[in-house]
Length: 134
Image (cartoon, rainbow, N blue to C red):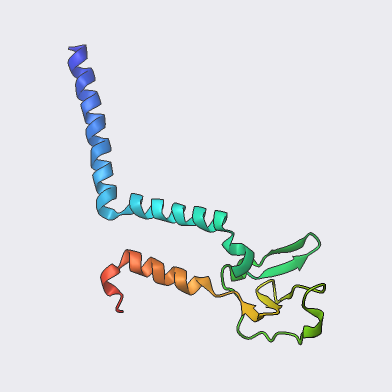
């Protein structure tokens, strides 16, 4: 009798776990959560903040401006004039401006792109793949 009750209890628990797994699979919660965690991991190890998030200068040095995560170079900003004679072999390699999102060197000027738009598009494509028109 005790063995039968134990077996039924274990079977009931397995059934509940199975039904929860099926429910999550149908709703996509587990897959979406796993995908978000994977994205957070890749963004962290890839150092995306290093170039694509504007920084604020503090007593401890530059820190990410929390209000501008991954927004890149702000289009309303103007680069200061650069004396290109200071750049080259035996001189400066380049200069950085505007929250560490603009770079000037022998190649000209480079700007960090805004990743927030790309992240929104990627999320929309993942959640609603048939709604994206190419």
